[in-house]
Length: 397
Image: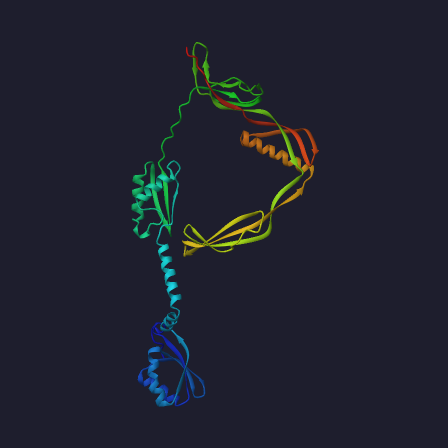
């Protein structure tokens, strides 16, 4: 027979009918219009079939008249699920409460981000956004339309060309595009460019001012390289000297490197701590007790719950506490010398600029003593040597 509609929501049972006059029983079902389906003979004088829950109790007079007996094999459908839930009412209440809390948490704003701002302070943007109702723990349904919020923020934030507001899940992102104003250059007083160290000039470029030295000339610390005074004593003009001067400078380093190097390594021992995260709060669930390691590093792993592509303000966090230890490694004298020279080169670049170039190096003295390698190294470095010196005027000028 044809399967009735909405059988799951109405509920149905799978039964086995045996003994008695089985054919008369099936004929009576047809005459009374009781729908049955999936009728299968299972053995002699027995058959399996399915019948709606509402029609099951109507079978009693037919069974009595035909002398058949019935056994219920399966109970399927929504009414039976509700019966199970009644027996587990506390579980059902807990599930409903969980989904209710989840719905409430996902209906709040949990984070407000400001991106694209350089000159405008983030705090200033957040203050204006709060006046428009954009702040953490605000109900999402209370927000105005995003286009209207963008327009209001653009009006109330001076120095902005455009402000966009975007929402992804429980996070609001405010995109700021600042107005491009002409850069106001500071007023500079007339000045010279002088050498900040003893050097031999390798190149000089005077953008503004009068160059007083040439390539390959030796200069002393404080000597004027590009003058900010133009003309003679009778007809002179002071300017801001601009340009670039490079020179060879000699840097002497006293280097010491131990031949026993210590390194931090992981032993492989790990203790995990697990947390349930709700917003900015974390509740520890597992991993209690003191850390049994003398030295360790902690690596945090976040695993937020997601609904489709939206991150929910709850999830799991795991802290991996990994034991560390120091191990010693004996290096050769050549390796120690290489480490020391590389460290000195890094120091030169950090102090005198990334455009400094090491032209040559010479080890003046070296020795090994008390487990260390000692060296005196002379580096020949090409670097920028010019610095500014304001021009001083006498009271009578």
